[in-house]
Length: 563
Ligand SMILES: [Zn+2]
Ligand SMILES: [Zn+2]
Picture 1: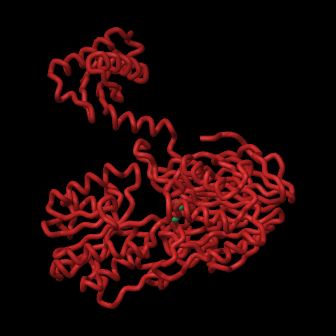
Picture 2: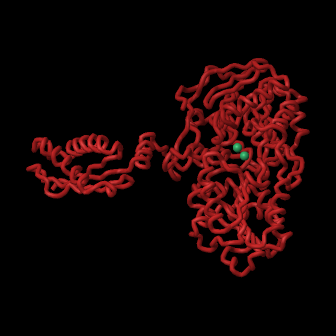
Picture 3: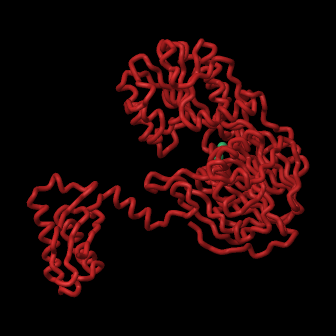
């Protein structure tokens, strides 16, 4: 967390500032600010999923303080594509700052669905753009440029400013055979190289991967193989936003005479949006509701589901635990996890895989089968882009620190001078003139932890409490004290959760009660009338006792009633 304030030192019309608010040094919460004179544009407003130790935190978003402080300058938010790490923070930003949002058709389709959940759909201006469209926003001229990625309808940006041109790839890979035949517009990117580009920002997610990323179409072969061999029901889990993957699964299903059932709220919602907008094609009498499952023989159905990351409430997790209302795993079933095992989720996913095997299913996943390809460019593609753009200055974005380092090494290799490559930090201001670049300090930035839909961040202390509860459990001491005399009239009763008194002997429990009573005896009657003093003393004494006897540090909650 960086907490340095506030405005960059200079901001005359002759300088351009680029300020990442997120996405640098982390996978997720991508958001970049471009500022020139009196104008600001924002590229993406994404979320990050929390680390497992951020208990009870649903999502993490960038701190948008800088935009709120400069609200009259902000012209628009430009969205490169509809992945959560690029759109997930949008509702939280729009709640504070009502500015137009620009994106392609499918991107806005997904965003609209999200804004509805937050009651922001009516108040937000959504502007649909196509690749090659050019818009003017203050002193910025922005051109949208088609890229290929693991979601349909992604774009990069070519931005002309009074200081020079900026190219931002968004997320991309160079897929020469995309499922929808909408190839990456390398020609337009090359034009920016020819005209001269001052600053290039490029996706670093896969900068550690050698060679080229496989085309999405390669997945089809892996799927066909599995479909060919399977005699029973097939379940394919994938990301609901990966419309091309869903399309390929449907195509292979149709080829093998199988009906398709979509499962999971986001899977159905996204497919519906993509279908309506023409990005997904499903032949008639192919898509059926899950209730119809029982009407089809085992070898004539495919279930496409969410839950590929082992999310606790997801359909796949429920299937693995044999708790799914409509689908019990049985021998002969084939389960395909057509997705990346995201680090951090590996344990949950592996647990599910084991359960599925236990129920007699055959399971295919990334590490044992060719059922997934990445959506991000590997080294050779990244070098190709650097060669096409030939920028004066290069800023690697979207990635952990190591990815940014790998990407700068590639830039050096293709001939960009080391002093023109900048690994920046979230909140850091990079200031450019048409010939020079300098690091110009920091703006307020950081991570906001969000619990549910609230815009209030979750305080650090709340997280610490939740961690403590999860690790050490809680001991509750219930006690009624007569206010005037300080006499204990009921209790102490001891209740524990996540902390085992049950295992311990009755003796220990009796000792705990004694500790409470001894503590009270040592207090003068007047002090005993003050419940906050009593809780404080009881908590302190029990903490010491439990730590000494059991070497545990549960949270101790005295509940004192005055009668
Ligand atoms: Zn993406
Ligand atoms: Zn991304």
